[in-house]
Length: 327
Image (cartoon, rainbow, N blue to C red; front, side, top):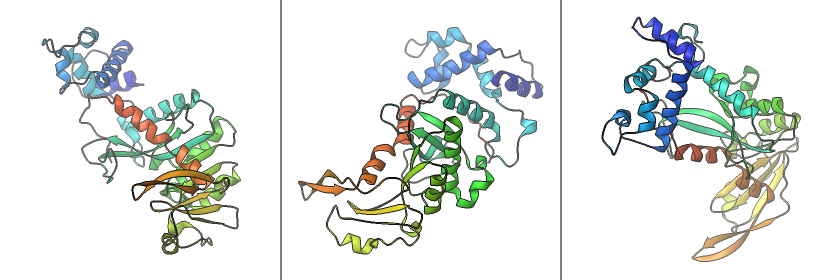
């Protein structure tokens, strides 16, 4: 894919060039991966003669000018056939290819999480305050949350990829429903998906239940479908560890728990019992407070996407180009 369309793009620029081969493209990506392990201030320093920067593995695999030629012409699609509705059209074939491989080798686990992930880019396509990566492109990610495979990415998506039939539920819920479809196409299992309050609504949990998918997530105060639980103001007046719960007409449980702050969790499968006990620090003394089962499960299995981001950050490619997806 990269060889075909990079050669096509180079030929349309009307510049003299030799055809990029598959071996050269593999060497090119190998250098990019190596730059995550051996980081230098500038990419040209890999080919310098200085003993403290020269890398024999890189210089013997490809010349500097050849690397920069491939870098300038790198493409994975035909620019003349881009979809105007897809903001990620230039990298959509790459998304589809890696998603196929992610799902082909995916371990069979029940617990999954859905969250947003940021691809760093300082051309400022999006800014999210308080995130480890604040500037870049926001993409949706579904990952395994089970402890033995936590952080395995199963699916990458974007807003323009969400099926129209799911958009009636809203942006956040439609992402979760799309991911549930991906899971069901892989293997029919009673999966359990965890997500935060950006995604959670009662209609989403009801729709997941109709497809035999369990779902649990924190929920905002204005999305509780008038469930009969204590208000946030009243709950703040109670002692730490106090909880209250109620259910909707379609068996969606909503639990409100008083911890450092008021926590709201909605689930279509988990229960309040058994009650667990967790340690907290209060006025420099350790105390034990009650914690409902659904909140304990949420804390244990929500971090799949965050773990994936953490793994990527350790060896993130340091060689980057200035090209950007047109939005």
